Image 1 (tube, rainbow, N blue to C red):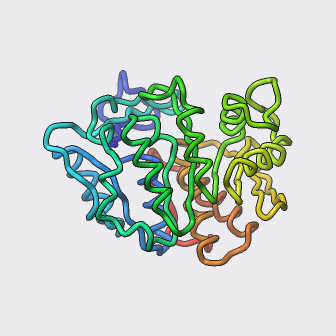
Image 2: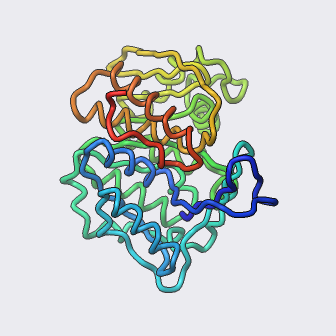
Image 3: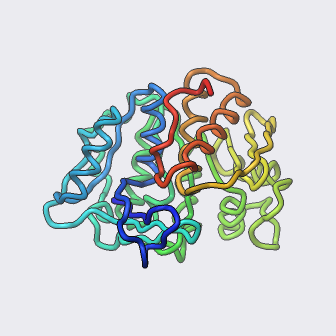
Length: 300
């Protein structure tokens, strides 16, 4: 999407100017992985408009392969308005991406990829994108990665758990927030979610990770308020985090995912991956952008 944000200290209602950027869960993670030296491609549909030109140009300059991005001459590129700390508002109904079906993947060598990633946002913007997300996972032969990214204000938000769960059932590596996975498990009748609604305490992370692993993924990373843990081969690994004041917290989860994925694909340990993810997630919160402050290495 095109992302519009007020300058720090202003709201969109009174800002003298706005900052123009690009955003989107999958593309944010692609930017992070490209900056960390991995070979990355992004697949989507955007409008044949100035917003689409800006997005393709920006991602290309990051070193991301955009050859499989389709341009729609009739439908426009989606837009997101950002106003930290209030959150975001989406304008995606009828966008080019909202009619992206499995055919967008037909020329892509998915089976040759070491890893593929799709998030729940794709499943929530339309029936055809959800089908495309499922097709991506089913055609993949490498690591299949999913982040539920449950969001409000989208086409499928009122049934988001039901739309996203099929992605989780088909993945190997799941990234999720504590409340997200509790909501999905409870809404879809999975065991281990309890009967009291979404979990709030970080100490439920391991329990929820085991419940999530029972429906598909072999590696489950759960992000909580003060801890982040990963269940790998039945063993729970956990690190504590300290959330400092953020200029813009939006995009931190995508940055965490990129850092974690980069380390794991290169053979690093779970602990190294968790710490890399935390470092990357913290870095992006220092700028009014989902990706501008993402580091170019994991040495810091």
